Length: 266
Ligand code: AP5
Image (cartoon, rainbow, N blue to C red; front, side, top):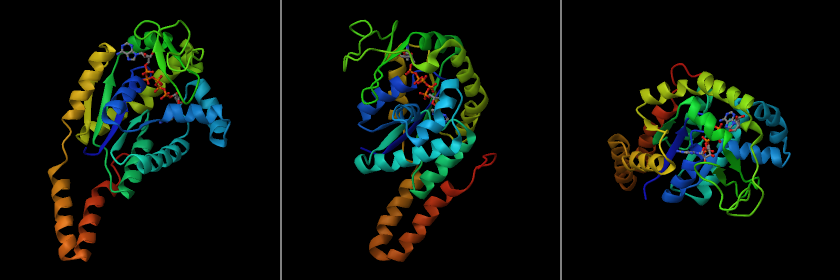
């Protein structure tokens, strides 16, 4: 299987976590969800957890530098067990995070293949978040919906039997803050990734299955860029002929990634 590095973008409650889980199962790649990682840190009362807890409780984004470090470590860990890529869910969420991600990947001579925007109107996501119930066990983390995906037994996780909870940030006033943060800080990434030719927009209003189907179609259309493929071919060819030339080719491949983006702060 070719490598796939995907980003799921969309407002809170668009269905990123649900769809990421299905997509990762289908592609057999890891699901790197910053919300889950940060909630895990809070639950374990780590230094990072103590730092981010007040932000998360208020529905505000945690500081960029904290989440960038968490993601960079997660990408390194994921590479050890899965060479085939990953799905980033909930990252990047600011222009600074997008810029940092590009730099993290450039160092590893990697690129994002596709950014999937699950476009879902505010009133739909509000309703979904009010109906969401979550498994509190960080190792399970199953997500339900009283309307669209109820548990088999009321209030109990199908997988581990734990009592389902309402996430602390799923209160109406906190949902509104999260939505405002999305429109202010994250929405500019739509244009940013569109200009890079990486964005594909999915209508998130459909059923779980309809949205999943659209995402799978988008992912199946990912092609390796001819430039990158030919560079790789050249590198392999020149490796046997002249190893020092190969190093030059590899530098050229990474140069585009390393270039800072216009408008991105860091
Ligand atoms: P995070 O956990 O990432 O929250 P979020 O982005 O607000 O997303 P959600 O998890 O609420 O929703 P989702 O899109 O995953 O939807 P889901 O699949 O659950 O982040 C939490 C906090 O961590 C942030 O507020 C911030 O403080 C911090 N944080 C995280 N990343 C950060 C970053 N990069 N930078 C800074 N801070 C960061 O679905 C929602 C519900 O709808 C479920 O009940 C589901 O069953 C249902 N549903 C889903 N799809 C459908 C459908 N198509 N039809 C019907 N129901 C559906």
